Length: 393
Image (cartoon, rainbow, N blue to C red; front, side):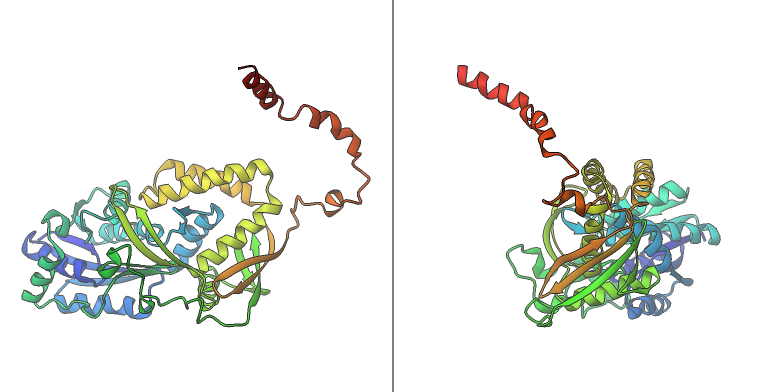
């Protein structure tokens, strides 16, 4: 009997896949859960569910540190936002797929399986990464058998498969963010109920007193909060705690999926919003105007590559090389005020700052203002010529 490694979360889709792979594909199923910062119970539960269903082996793979330093912080340096929100689920999928590929090679598996449907984004993210690093066959039972959610539930019930029936929404959670979708949220006119949120307080329930924090960066990467050095995982979690407490990081959008469907999505990304906001503020004094303009193009392209599951696209590596060079000067400190769902930059400083207080001062005499007359006279020359032509008509 050939082996198959199944990326396993313990949810309905992947739980059903265990039995489907045994019954429909006649394969020995090895399950694996990759820890990218999910809650502790979401790491422990898959192992218990897998054993109950009957997988031959189950692995729990700790990838939190790698996720933070090699994926999240690359996205921070690029200010990666897709249609206005920080990428969390999309950023974790390539790493999960890479760890599954490594495990499949270790186990001598003939195939790799996932529980994605044919309507979502994750099928692209998983499979593009798997194919770039493995020659294993890829099996997607839910998609391949064209199963509906109701059919999955019926199959699970008839085979004694435990399902997370207490969950009203479909939730994906990792170190960088939490996504909430499905059920009543599929109606874009329905307000997201307060009980759907877990990481963030509402602005009404946030503390009345504002909080000011100082975040320190080295070469574009956050390294300390209020003078306390932290590991990447510790720092991200602390930013999630602080920003979430102040009602920051809720995003409710209708986004464009890879296949063209519009999907209503809710996200909680408090730490991501705080870090990227501070990072952009530091860039403003350490990068030139032309660098900042080009950085906007990089940010959009980088985010689209990640969202579309193209982490292994050479362009992403090319952009990392450009970004890393630019970010060598994004070092310094940023003060941020958090209050009732809002953030405000209070100050920033950098040893690489291009800001000159003396030069910009109204009292400065070093730059002779009279020398600007010729430059100003010819500024907008083509536009002035155009206006004259229009008046002739």
